[in-house]
Amino acid sequence: MNKAIIGKKLGMTQVFLADGTMVPVTVIQAGPCAVTQKKTIERDGYEAIQLGFEEVAEKKLNKPEKGHLKASGATVKYLHEFKLEGSSLEVGAKVECDTFQAGDFVDITGTSKGHGFTGVIKRWNQHRLKETHGVGPVHREVGSMGPISSPSRVMPGKNLPGHYGVEQVTVLNLSVVKVDKELGVLLVKGAVPGAKNSIVYVRNAVKK
Image (cartoon, rainbow, N blue to C red):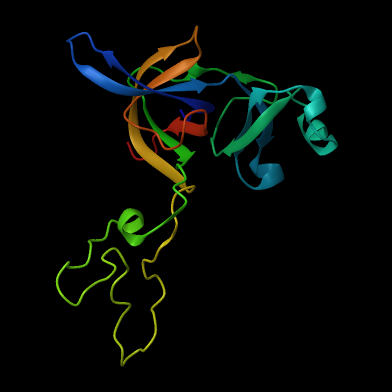
């Protein structure tokens, strides 16, 4: 069964399993999410479910948002669509963290941390230049841009300095260590992209 939920990354901690093994986990506030729209093959050409997360005051929504959310009765800040084929969820239904269980494998998508403008060493993991006579004065620069005679230009795709981070990143096959319905959180083994309090999208693993 296809499952998905929107959550917020709260941070990392560690838990101990029954055999005493220490496991690093990311704590995700998962849901509750409202089903705000359901796409069907007959009407839209594909099947999908749109979920809404994080309740906000109705006065903070504009008229198009209010009209879109009217059918579900939700007042939410974040919307995201998941291609859940054959889902039995209907508009207005609630999705809670217990849609997942301990032992499930999930794919988590988030926005990576921003690092500003960085050089090629930090951005692309390149080596420093040799610190010998005639190489300096800068040893952390790009280096050779390519052959001088042919094609006499910088080829597209060359790794250069620039804006590093703030990209959509998906981590595959993370295991759910624990589900706490009372607190509404998922404990997922390992690291998850994004800073604290950033929005993440959790769905069942597609390659497991």
